[in-house]
Amino acid sequence: MTASPSSTEATSMRTRLCGSLRVEDVGAAVTLCGWVAKRRDHGEHLAFVDLRDHTGIVQCVVPGTVDVRSEYVIAVEGVVRPRPDGTANAELPTGEVEVGECVVTVLNPAEPPPFAVADRVEVDEVVRLKHRFVDLRRPSMQANLRLRATVNRALRAAMDRQGFVEVETPLLWAPTPEGAREFTVPSRLSPGACYVLPQSPQLAKQLLMVAGVDRYFQIARCLRDEDLRADRQFEFSQLDLEASFAGQEDVLEFVSEAVLDAAEAVTGVRPTDIPRMTWAEALDRYGTDKPDLRFGMELIDLTAVFEGTGVKAFGAASVKAIVLQDGAGLSRSRLDGITDRAKQLGAKGLAWFRVTADPGTGGDDPALALDSPLDRFLSDQERAGLLSATGASAGDLVLVVADEYRLACTVLGQLRVELGGRPVGEGPYRYVWVVDFPMFDGFDEAGNPVPAHHPFTMPHPEDLDRLESDPASVRSQAYDLVLNGWELGSGSVRIHRADIQSRVFSVLGIGEEEAQARFGFLLGAFRFGAPPHAGFAVGLDRLVAIFAGEDNIREVIAFPKTQSGADPMTGAPKPLAPGVLAGLGLQLIPSKG
Image 1 (tube, rainbow, N blue to C red):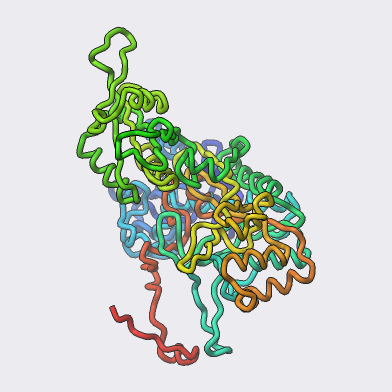
Image 2 (image 1 turned 120 degrees about the vertical axis):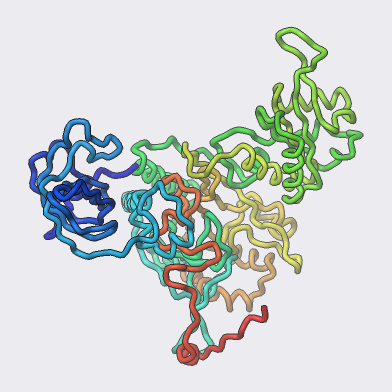
């Protein structure tokens, strides 16, 4: 949704905005400022100039000729009048009026732009980013940036209404154990020592809870030196919050209120309350911890159907399936491609079954048959069980993976999205809370469990007694918010008790000396009275991208990096001068590659 252009943004140089003029303004004398979108000469006595600012385009009629070209910055004085009969432009909000008898003042000439400033023009991304100052003039980019501002405003208002106070935390920080690679900042005043740019304000906001701030938030800038992709940049923004004397239910309520307010501010419609499911349920039904609820195609368990089977391909711990409606018409080469994709994702193989009407039966409700290289190996009971469990109809395609449970789920979960999904920015907006994540996600080379979130996440109270004996079975009090298959953010109830934190560190293989070296400032603060607290962070770039209908967060960031991490506009990253390096006590070692 684009906000209506304001007619009150007057300055000493302009009285109105281009896109604000309507029929009710006929007769008004106006001064407009903007960029020339197009100039059309009608002989020596008349010229038309389409003038553009961030609110839109209006046609200006100039007596005689005018020496301007595309992207010249000009001021126009004239009178609003109706367009002549038959010349209205229904594609423009200003299309029923024009500004006549115009006097044009060139405020700044411009070179021809590297590409047309229009949404309908396709431009190479590197060219767009190199000339981002031109790219941002396009109506869609202007709308995206203003939509982002609308979201920020709604989030801030929601947090303020719920009693949160905005506090800014440092950008120069100490290394933290949050799982991602950090950007390092050498210290000139302490040669050999470094700061890092924060992956998040995680530890700082926990210290604010110890400090008695009670409810904190900020729209925080975070930096992570990770590979870039459609939903990830080096720099990103998040709505970061933390609350004392609060638990999971409180945080889910705080965040739900904020993101639903933002959706309403953008669309004018408030989504319904956000459902929730456990991590185990999400994996079982959708094969992922970030399920897209806009479409069905849920995973189906066929393990019982093939229990004791003689079909070697199905002799695995778990047998899972998905049904692609009307997918039976896929070619054999396409099916081979899907099978190869399943193997790329880690499966040993993939079985497929086309569901057809049995030609041997007649009537209005013919029996179903299976068309597959494996069909001849199935018993009648297995064949019937597969059809019954999947509920497949004639014309459908059943895809089956037999493997270790989690692998079977994740492979089919990815195929589900690739075969049945839709662009993440396409509506409707389907939020879901995913709760009860595992405390740990596998083991490292030393045999120590790896935190699924971070080592300050509170274990589930029902599982605390198994922390040392069976860490893989322990659930955490962690939770994610998912929208249209994108993880918007994560949060958790934090450990505030020294005894529990020591137990978690011990399980992770972090000794007391190492814990003090890495987290001493936090652990020391906790000795002075840490309240129970919990928090969350919402990825703003992802949230805004979905609202804007974009599938890449670069489209809602003013100055993003390319996928290689470069900034074509400024040329960053660039080498530092030898003198600068010497002042920092640094020497760069050339790459051996």
